[in-house]
Amino acid sequence: MSRKGNDYRRKRLVELSGALSGISQSVILDGELVCLDDEGRTLFYDMMFNRAPAYFYAFDIMSLDGEDLRDRPCIERKALLQDVVQAGPQRLLYVDHLEGEGERLFEQICERDMEGVVAKPKASPYRGLRGKTPWVKIKNPNYTQAEGRGDLFAAGAWFCIWSLFTSSSSRCALSSSLQGRRHPRRNPPIW
Image (cartoon, one colour):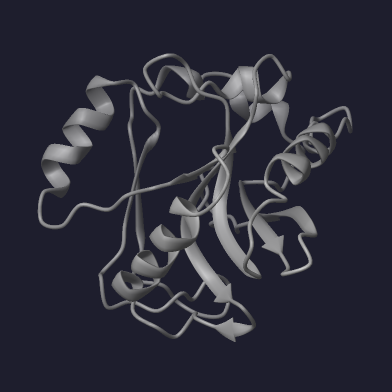
């Protein structure tokens, strides 16, 4: 949502609900809406101003056919997520994981001008807002699309979690919620 109260998410929700309605299973996915350039990099402003088709990058799965998966280890959830995404429509993309080479991955993220990475222990459950999480978000300090982004969002909003809900009856809904909290003496969010 912009500081002037414009909701930029609405059009994207409608657009992707139709594009992702072909998922045959009932799932709740955690992910991010993105627009991509020819090299697969995200284009934040194209997303905000509807200049390119949107994709849903799925990086975790919380529920599959009614079963709550949040207490399962991350590595098990990733395997289930990969199966769902491979069988899904083209606008649903799987965010792969890499074991043991985090520093090299982060270097490549920075070289390609990407926003950052999230490090998750492979045995970790999905905690979200239910409790402390061992996940660590590591941001690229030189990410060029970070400039001026704070002005686009309403005060009190830090990051957006997009969830994709589908059911076996081919209904699809996307929702988003702004999550986060501020440290009392610092401006940046605590991830």
